[in-house]
Image (tube, rainbow, N blue to C red; front, side, top):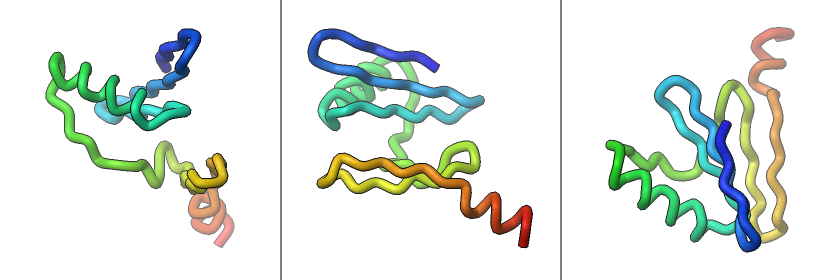
Amino acid sequence: VFYKRNKWEFTLITVVVDDMLIASAKREHADKLIKQLKTKFKLKDMGDAEFTLGIHLDYQRERGILRLNQRLYIDTTVG
């Protein structure tokens, strides 16, 4: 886990093997970081993540909400 924080922004980066997840309060901060990383590394932008490490990500951007759940894990373990 890495992060970048200053007076105007906070961006969180997680790296697991060959997958990277970037989260930021403002989309333009994440886009700026992706652009910078592309100058140094070969990246493929897969868009918004739906799952990471077995966790489902549910966005409601207009309301400023991000919900996390492990429903699929529970369903496959219990069911």
